[in-house]
Image 1 (cartoon, one colour):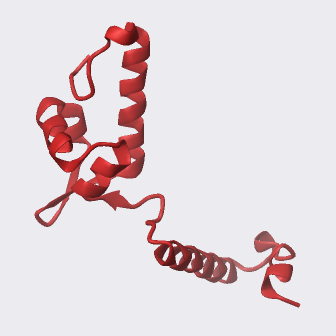
Image 2 (cartoon, rainbow, N blue to C red):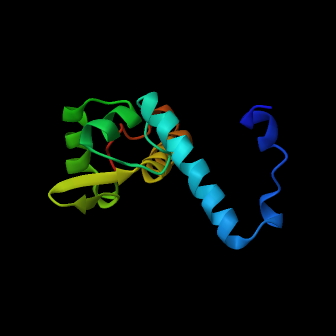
Length: 116
């Protein structure tokens, strides 16, 4: 019987806390490996400038322009050494807020990067 056939039979809440923790760590590592094979990052990964720009659908130059114009976007970043990183979820929330501003103001809403 394959491991996949057994997986659905594991009731992680009926095993000890140590075994549950070990099991969850193995599962997390397996997910990381599959994502790495596909060239993707885990959902919680912080993005570098190019990755953040790609995530919101602009180029690096436009992303730097947006950073200069929108203090909210710049405020989402944190530093890792000299590099700035943006949490993927924070960029998603920023894009949603921009979409809401455009929706509320209609087609005459502020262009991407301008504060509403």
